[in-house]
Length: 431
Image 1 (cartoon, rainbow, N blue to C red):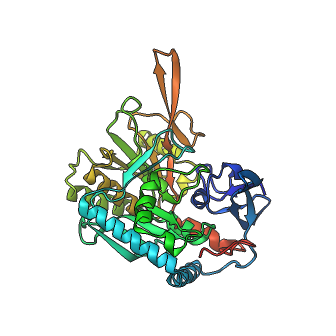
Image 2: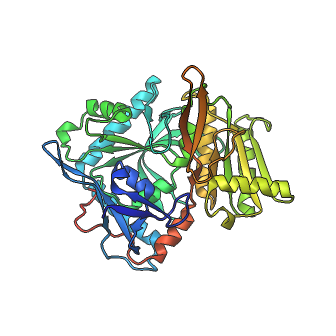
Image 3: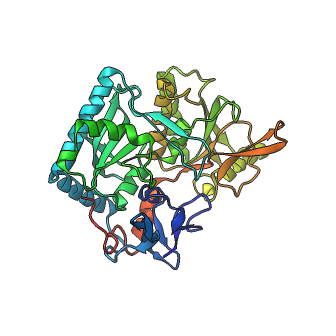
């Protein structure tokens, strides 16, 4: 199967197709999930990576239906916890997994103790011409293995390694995570976690590695290699980042955009908007942001001009915004982080991201305040800059206009279709 139908996108539910060749990796496929068969939308599909032999392409990438195994009405939370329990069992039985985790924890602790960071960077060329850059250990004070986390859909899981910073209010702040993988086959569990995750996650691949190959030197090297890929475009480690965190880590040159602030556009029910505004005001105050610096504006369509402003914001977020709230929205205008060393700025954005992903809301984005959505059909913000010295106009892709779909709607969709969560025929286990 060469093409799949994206269940959710800015163009609307079941309105966008993607070709298998445009999926860059299994991790990319997880971000796009769920996808269905365009000819029979009751069937979920998984992306199968291309295979090579002696450096030559043996089989092209393609999509494959998931096996008939689950029927409508299944309890997705129970299924998630069943898969999580199976993963933990297999991990416990794998001495390679245990050693890799121990070595990585020790390496992270050494870096924190010596004041060294863990820089990472990558470029998502599908949505931006500029790199995403961060430091997984910014503000970190401790590392904890087997860290329990809850999801917005009511289930819990254990993160292999959590990187923690001092609390803003009560609980330690989760600033990053690491998960050890023995196989990169697609599974719905990781996709669901990714949809609800408000922190950078590095996945470390130990496929086919032996105990003798897992050493202190390996741990130091594999973490440093997060910024580089191999000759075939595959990484032994991969940085997973939810789109809602892209504005936090994007590095825009000053000559492309010099506005020090950017904006998040949030559509949700009235109660959710009120709670978010209260929480974010408390967060900004705790971090020392003045009200003129972090501006939280509830926009009510009580006049023709206000209604027009609401509709303009809706056109940025894209299809379906009216079903969340066609009379009210929250505009969050905050300073961009001042680079990978701006601990306060990253704390503000990281907590904002987690709050948005924990609520039933639709999230849009403006990379600057004084910009006009002159192409509503375009999913990515384009910046036009005339270069007098070249006598031509340059076009830069900045970031997506739509950053997040509510996890609850994804759960509703999965519960409504026939086969869900089953492994593809012939797919191998994660461990």
